[in-house]
Length: 274
Image (tube, rainbow, N blue to C red):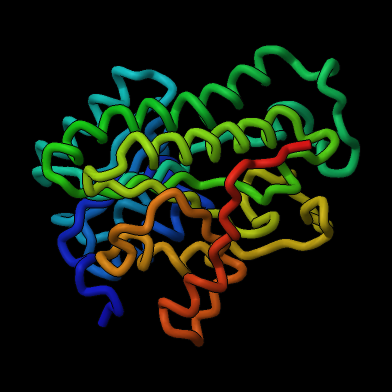
């Protein structure tokens, strides 16, 4: 039985839901009884495989490029046609530094050495893609007086780590946008929060190999994202907005309130980058 009964029947849209962090969140939420809409950039066996792990009546899998505003709107329209609404958006779709270099985590690429096209692709999906999806779901959520937007981010050190441009700056932009969106949506019943693993995860964002690891030498399992995602999508988190939660710091042995307090990054009045 799910510890969050409010998830049963809740309509949750997860972009980039066919693998990695997205796949784990999809499966966790589906097990709790949610209706799942998952997207992938293209029609793939992975997308169909994950969709096949969710009861047919509770899943809608769509190939969509979230960088395209019309595609984002179409995803939301199809979700509403199938399930009547979108209650939660998890902006998980993203691209990482492998577009810049397959050795980025052991041999930093200086920003002027990066391909402009790779730079554009990373910024486009990580920032504009999240905006396009949030923009598409917000009006319906506001009209219904309820909704949640959860933006998947990265560790703060990654945002400013040498050789991690543009991936790091793209996530800094997404977190800044999340803070603005939370304020824009204040009083509407729609919450906006940030969720992140808390370190490098064993996903395709890292180059494959026997010594696969993040810049800090560690590697988290993608399943770590299961820890808090149910709580964030449930009524237990209603009214919590403009916050940042780290999965690695979520202690599953504690009560939700205690675990959330331990996993929440301290709020700051004025963000500091340098």
